[in-house]
Amino acid sequence: ITCVILHLIKFDFGVFIMSKWIDNKTVLLTGASSGIGKMLAERLMKEHNCKVIGVARSEKKMLAFVEELGDYAKLFSYKLFDVSSYDNWMSFHDWLVENNIKPDVLINNAGVLPRFDRLMNYTKEEIDESINIDFYSAAYSSKIMLPLLMKSETPAIINVASSAALMALGGTSMYSASKAAVKGLTEAMREEL
Image (cartoon, rainbow, N blue to C red; front, side, top):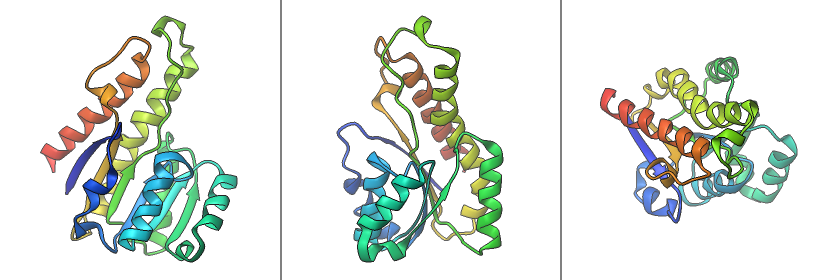
């Protein structure tokens, strides 16, 4: 299985996927309703004819995105859930199995960027949200989806991180820590698999 870390500051995703290995794949993509996730979903469908199952929390944003897709909407479906919940990932896994959907690629893109501040000024809730969404979602989804992905001829897990994982700056303690955890997870999975 391919395990890749994307550091998306000034990174063109097209450079990574311009090879044809991703053409016609079924892709699970978290954070698909806006920002980088929305852009990734569009490029995967329009340039690589991928079927994308987007995961996000906002149905309003997902419905607006589906409307924007026009003819490409036939390649897109979505599930709404909080990616930081292990039980939600188990339910999603079971739904994929029940519907005979065989994913090839998991892209863990969902994330939060906490306000820039010193660690001592963060609330417990802000700390939890950062670690839960940025890190636990990638760990839970990778663990739970791996058996399904391994049935593909070309399985891949792509975890979106940040250069903040490589060099922390003052005011980014939680963001840097959660993205460093994603980086470490991905590198260890690459060795294991």
